[in-house]
Image (tube, rainbow over all chains, first blue to last red; front, side, top):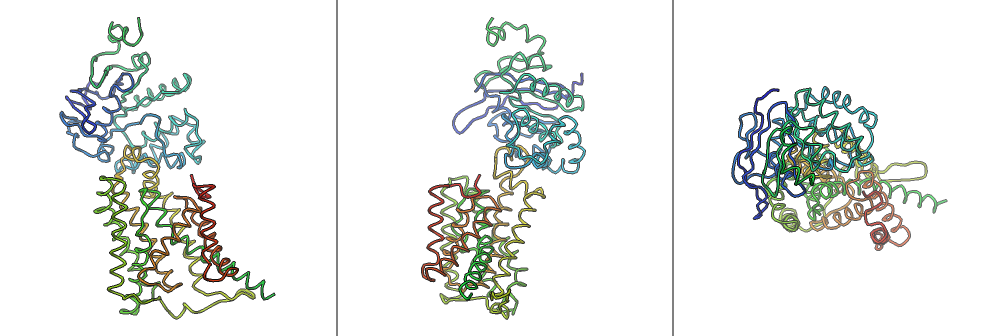
Length: 239
Length: 288
């Protein structure tokens, strides 16, 4: 396992207007691992992702990526560094074709020159996208949409990808397929962070996990240890 | 036979005028589609291009169509600056703030036109504006033909731009889901500035051909704004094909209205169609 630290979030506080959404949140993502961020709806998972993506800036604390402080950077600068968020429900551009959606993924300057080779890889991971490349995104099925959202993320030439509720509302077969691709992506050297309500699945797929509750990280560690943790069993498995 | 020829030429002129009206409406449609702003200064900005072309013609002897080389970049620049330094900031205050700024721009421009060019009626009169051409029994003004072809060419270019270039796709993306566009690394404020600039560059072309086709006064901006509204309501916002069809309907309604009801009532049918459509299909013929 490579142990090099890629992303370090240290003690951030995030506010929406006057409302505090995150308290003293810290998290580390190491190069090459799959990190799971687990929590119920409203626990602050998406807020944490948006802080990392530069959509919302923390009031306190720091976010470092590859040794560089990115807390004050704008979202369009952060994407160019190689941090990619695949948002909840995909958020595709519904009136653009599949291939236009993929093109937009490579909008940032660092990804444009690699557009062609990244496109080939995306079609390798998801052959269905190639078959549907001239279709409007809104005509895709739920699973295909999520595949396109992941493909669009891969087009940005990322070093780390955050998957927000990737499996929400999808069938087990599709979810298995998505996780299979996720493992393939990881083999290519892209670090992944999965953000899920699905505790069992996240603990199975991730190397390490952070558990969030009401805007705080309440527990973290190797998933192998966390699976046995009493707290989790009680809170999420009800036994 | 004479009546048939009259009717045929009325219809042909309506279609050609439709190309011009689509051109007039394109900029309004882009700005609404991308920024959700009803740019009430659209007609006045378009008229600014007409007056710029008039000035270039009067003082430098430049043909208005050649003058586009200067007028298009000028309006592109003005559009970029207005969006970047005025409207982008106003959008962070409220949705009404940019609308009020657009009203302000409209009032200022109308007064500038009055002061610099007097309230008199003007026109871009050239050697070819009064020429006509014949197809069979039809005798049509040459400028109408120009209007139509320029309108079609601009629409084709715009379509290609929006679907083939990174900037075009980014404009499209930002208009569909702003947050997702952010996550793709799109600087939406910059994209908005370019979108407004492109809308103004198209308005510049529209302004010059409007000036070649009709006389204009400092108050004419309002009538072009109203025509653009009609086209956009008919065609649905954010659709180039819809804008084209909307333009054709407005052009035809106007010339046929003039033919059957007289010139005083020529816009009556056009706006009756707009009202009926708004009541029955508010998203427009091609609306999303």
